[in-house]
Structures are given as C-alpha cells and as structure tokens.
Image 1 (tube, rainbow, N blue to C red):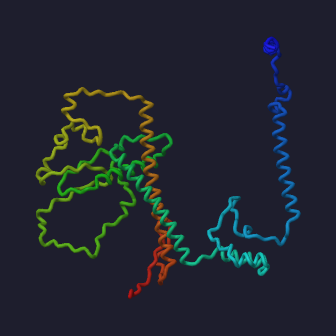
Image 2: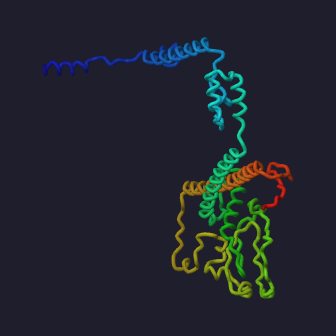
Image 3: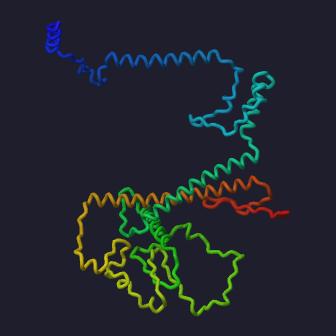
Length: 366
C-alpha cells in the first residue's frame, strides 16, 4: 500500500498541465472567452430578474382597482427619493374604522388624509421650530469652538509669508489673509491706558471681518456716568490702532517714557528683527551661541506651507459657516415669533442679506 501511494504521487508529476482555452485571435474584439462558471452566474442573474418581472406582471394583472392602504398617500417620492411626511395623524382610529368597515369611501379617506397631512396646529409647529433652532444653535456653538481653537493656534503666524497654493485663487488667498489678520486682532483686543502700539510689517489691508465692522458701538440707556470727579487733563491720550494691522502693546508708566521708547532695546533684539512675530532671537543669544541655520528640505517646506494654507482655508470656511448658521437661527426665531400671539406689522421686507423686520403692537401687561 505504501508503494502504491508513492507511485500515485510520482505519476502526478508526469501529468500534462491543464491549460484554459483562450479567445481565438479573430474574436479578440469580444474580450475574454466566457467559461462555464461565468455563464452560470450570468444565467442565474437573468432567471432571477425574469422571475421577478413575471411576479410583478401577475400582481399588476390581478390588481384590485378599489384597493387602498395608507402607504399610498403617506409616502411620496421626489426624483426617485422617498420623502417621509412629518405628520403621522393618518393612522387615527377614524381612518382605520372607515377603511375597514366601509364607513368612508376610499376617495374621501384620501382627500381627508391629504388635508390633515399638511395641517399642524400652532403649538405643534412652535415646538418643532424650537427643536430645529436648538439644533442649529448647537451646530453654531460647535463651529465657534472650532474657530477659537484654530485662532489660538494660528494667530501668531506671520501672514505676510503665507504661500499661495496651486489650487487657491488670489481672491481666496486675500480672504485667508483677512481671516488671519482678524484672528490676530482678536487675540490682542485688550486696551492699554498708556502704551506704545507696534504694528507689524504686514501689507495693512483695510479689509476686516464684516461682522466686526458692521457692529455699532452703542451704550445702554440705563447706564449712568458720573464724570464730576474725573480729571480730564490727566487722561492719557488714546492709543491709535491702524486698521488692518496687528499690534504688540507695551505698557509704560507715563507719556514721556512712551515718547522715548526704544523697541529694539526693550526686546533686546536687533532692529531688523522687530517685524517678526515669532522666533525673534535676542542679541545675547546671537553673541553667545552661533546661529545654526538648518537647510530644510524643499519638499518638507512645501508640505508645511500647504498645511498652513489649508488651516487658514478651514478657518475662513468655518467663519462663513458660523455666520450662515446665525442667519438661519435668526430666521427660525422670527418664524417662531410670527406664529405667536400679538398684532404685528411688517416694517421692512426681506432681502438677500437681511431678514424681514416686524413691529409688534405694545400690549399692557397686567
């Protein structure tokens, strides 16, 4: 028996290798030659579709013209996509009894269901509007949190050296630089009684964030200011903040020190390095330690610059998204208030940038 097994194994090596028949050269335009396993898959798929079509045809032939069920009027399609309705009042006991016992005809049930499907009372609509506005506000807060994180990580980066990516137009690049400068101004928003403003060496574009530009400076009527004890002669002069430039404010004791202030001496650096916002070495460091300038790889520098440009693009997109969500939230709040009680009158119609303005009649509260 052992010899027979060894003979079979040796005989396998003498067998001819099986080769699949290929497509003849004159039929190469038809592609690969179909094998039986390919035909079986194709035939099974064909017969499956054939059986389904036959079942659908039989169902259509035996259809009852008076047949009705609520799915016919509850579900609808928009360009092939099912759209579910919000109201679920069509499965009331009145409909169920009418459909089963014949108390209401199918046409009457359909008309009543269509009427009720598009009707909600004011209280239900106000609840839905409140839920929708809460969701929009939560998304807005998430965007604001992301914006603050990006601003905290990007406000110290010099925007004058910001690269122009290959897929970024000049207009988009200007928007990115505008967002970067607005982030830097937001980080240095604290005012000084007496100080020296050191503008950076940026291009000083006058474009600023529209939301900060449009915000008016107002005072509440209930605020009282007592300026009898204030000495106007000792009031420090206001610090001038040029528009479109970030500043580094240094606090001093009096106006004389502000006039004699030397920025290079204060920061212990060279005058040529004052315009740098980050990695600004001191003079003693330059004297004591030799300046080791590493030659970065060109590909690595391009990768870092591309990543930084993408972060500014993300910041600009998130700011625009937050502003859009704010407009949507205001529109929802207006719709909710319009559904409430009270006599109102439209003051101004809505346009592409601002919603409509309504004025409510003042009512005496008892």
